[in-house]
Each structure stands twice: as C-alpha cells, then as structure tokens.
Amino acid sequence: MTIRTESLVHRYGDSVAVDGVSLAIDDSEFVVLAGANGSGKTTLVRHFNGLVEPDAGEVSVNGRSVPENLVAARTAVGMVFQDPRDQFVAATVGADVAFGPENLGLPRPEIDRRVSDALDAVNMAGRDDERMDELSGGEQERVAIAGALAMRPDHLVLDEPFTGLDAPARDAVVDRLESLHGAGTSVVVVTHDVRDLLAVADRVVVLSSGRVVVDETPDAAVEQLEAHDVRAPRRC
Image (cartoon, rainbow, N blue to C red; front, side):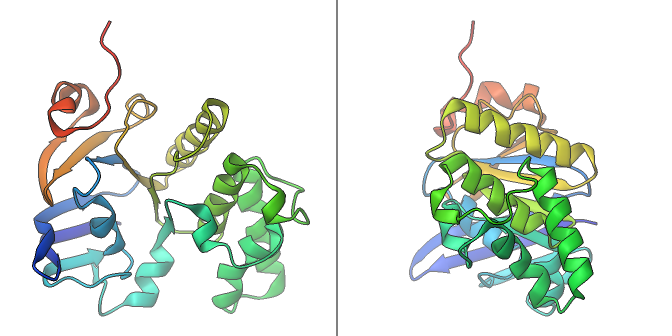
C-alpha cells in the first residue's frame, strides 16, 4: 500500500513545478510535505489521484499506474483541499459526506454506515442535518475530512488544512489526524508551517523549486526547515 513517484515532472508552460521527484509514502506512514509557497507541494500531491497528469516520469498508488487507473487511485487516495468549501457539493453535513459513497454505487445501508463512521471519526456524530454554511471553519474542515474518510481510502492527503483555523480548531484537526494514523491510514499533510505536526509525524519531506531537498525524520529535519522558508517551532 504505497504512493510512489519516479522522476516525476510537471510543467505549467515554461515553468517547472515538479522537477524529477522520486518519493514513496508507505502504508500507515504520517508524512509532512513542507515547503514555501510555490515550491510545488500542491502540484505534487494532485498527481496522487490523477487531478493532474505528469509531463514525465511515473506515479502509482498501491502498485497501479494512476493515469491508467484513475478510479482506483481516487478510491485509494482521499484528498482534502486547502479550502474545504471547494469540495462541498451538498447543503447539509450528512448529504455532503454521503456524496462519494453514493457515486461508488454502494447500497444505502452501506452508505449510511460509512457516513456515520466518518462523522464519528471527526467528532461530528449526529450532526447530519446541519447546514454546511452554518458551520465554523474548523467544523467545515472536519466535514471535509469525513467526506474523504467515507470513501475508506488507504491514504489521506490534506492540502494546508490549517489555513484560517484558530488554535482550538487546529488542535482538533491534529487530534483527528493522529487518531486516523493510529488506526492505520497513511496521512500526508501539505503545509508551510510544521509547528503542530512534528510531534505526530513519522517523516518530513521538504520541496524547494519543485525538488526534494529534505527527507528526514522530524528530529533530523527540524534544523533545516528555516533555510527553506518553512515555519519551524521556536527554539528554547
């Protein structure tokens, strides 16, 4: 159960956003993918479920080419975007979380079970009928995570999940991610600010100008972060 890229290249016109990245993210691993704005983080992870296609190199999920197996990739990789509102498709919490399983053609009892389990996992149980536009930013983020979880992915990828969240909401999201990781889901968090994540991550990967410049354990990576414009914890 691995996400793997081999010499992956992606260009926007004459600009190279991802420049020869080879990377493997294993089953149950918690990876922080860090880097300054424009370093290529979002473009890289959008290859994981085929939202963009490589200009060169390869990307696979669980041993299968992503471009050749889009449905399998999008089932295996749950993606939570930087602004969770970008992926909401329904007016209420329950309907939004149910959307993905419904598109898989699952029977209604299975859909209901997945919605219930996913909402429970993010501490939103029993709130199926609440309107999405009446939720706080932290609650919307948790519903977005629930929507991904309802697909029962092997891997969960979150792009800047803390943008606009206050400290309690950030803490709640980190707690949920740590719990999911403990239950066996591999987690990838894209961020330019690693302060809340070093204690729970297994590994830190840093991109700069589309290339991997750091791939270390959190303890080994922390001294290198500021050199690449990544916000690191304050030193005592």
